[in-house]
Length: 245
Image (cartoon, rainbow, N blue to C red; front, side, top):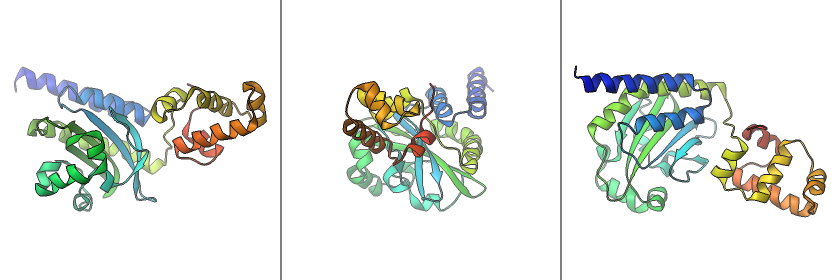
């Protein structure tokens, strides 16, 4: 085995260690993407956990594009027939479609909106149950993913499936810090201030007094926060956002 392969395997071993050792799944995804970029050229990426009850996916992390918090396999451009196999699988769009691929680029709103041309998908399954999916994308004008890049993803898929299975089976809610919420969901400075007060346990009247604005305005800010975070109550807010950074 060449020295370059020894070096490559050492880095991949480090990525695998981080897959298991990083507690928060969102942080794990960010470290995963950082490590994978040493071997795989991609412009954007996302990692979703599968929600079996809702039959959709919940976002854990995205890179370089504004991914939806909740989405479906169809919206992500994932081939449904491959999901039905219920096996860990790494594939490119172009591996399974030619004319359909061109149709996807033209009609899939997510591909079109973000100017994606090619996708590489990691379908993650544990004990015949979907646990999540990782998608890597390339912008228009770039070449397709190659077989060496697929081989790296294949080295990681079993570890990722096992790691995500623990999240899915434990029913762990993905929680964000306030700064992560501001960046991810586009909260305004006023909304951020209201959010911090809510997390401190203050009611609308207390927030109104502290910020010296009407309770009506406070309610408007709260409704905007709920809309952006796709929630409908303070209980859901505390499940989604950490009280402390």
